[in-house]
Image (cartoon, rainbow, N blue to C red; front, side, top):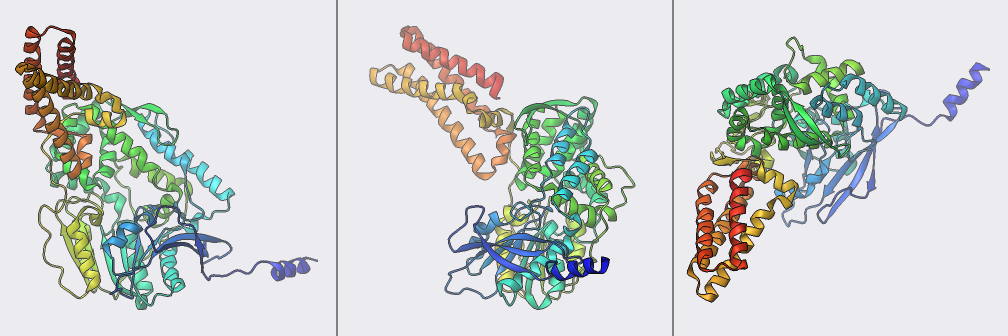
Length: 567
């Protein structure tokens, strides 16, 4: 009887296969014309192929007359960062090539998407007291994913790399050019080693070598980055001040959409800054931001807290931790407890999940490899990426000045050099980028008012009322021959115009700067507004009727608002 049952199971069970297939889908985000989207259907585990999953991808077809036969295939980092939303950006960067963007299995545009809102909420809970239990949240997420049939052992660098190799074959490209950023540089290096006949060139932006133990290096990398920015002492002063007296910061829970008061210690802020400094715009304003925090400008913590929350919901944390728990955490010693709560939280998740090690060995691709790194990168610094790049058989390294992580997003010069390399991998890319390639430090007057106004525009009502009153006063004074009133209005309009021009100019160069303050030149502009108020008040002695009284009150009220709240 038992033999019959076994035979029936064998004969009538669905076939187990390690093969892959491509199937079309509607694009989940807006795409440029001539772009199609699809899924790569692949085994969840190639070593035990009992279940299939779907890996999202997009293909933009070039219509250039000189279209090259080998496309660029791109994957974002993370782990668990989405990729296909950059298809349009990359198609403009490589107009003469097809562009393929591939998701990581388990990411937002793949199926299943391994979200872990339980862990995300626990990480937000690190800014509450008592702190949330990350390990308990991890167990809840793991158990829920298991009930859905997910085998977390199938979500690691080895499987993600195999997906890229399989997609090339499914799409029918003879060869292509690999483009990875941060975590996905590991993926692309493994792809190049596993599929040498299908790889023409490799671009690694913000290279994270397999041999680097990221968690053990995290605190040092942050210290090195702040030292390069010239804020090392101020950073430690800020940290010490907030450890001694935690800041209470209004914030919004990104999952629940509810406001709460975050309790932020110096180490909490350091953790958030370690992530924020990935952005070149943040690195550019850090020399103003960090000393201001050290002096007690806690209002500047609100944008950092909000950005940290938004970052938590931009990744599928189930995928992130599945990769980290197999490919990164087991290879770090953690002999010294990190002061960064993300490092300790990741270890807590991995201790709870108990996934097996799976990190591949350092790959040695045959194709030419071009590695770029940012001068201020707090995660993949030149200290580790340069020697690893130069150790590759055909590797070269270049540091891009005044940028941080993911340099191709921040530097036009870096993008141009990447395109030149892909066009001619054997060519010369040694001409340096100019020192002003990235966002430059700003001369800022530190204030949290612009960020608060961006969240609640009605807070700018006193400025709008002042500008409108000044314009009306200018026109009325000019028409009626009242010189004092006209000059008062002219001064107010001039102030408003100069303020708007300065703020928009700052935002055009680095929008992040507005979260820290306004151009330093705006301080002296206050004298123009004061002159407007004085002239307006003087005109009141000659015309004491209600319109002039109203304008005078508005001018005086604006100066109080400007000097006591905005500045």
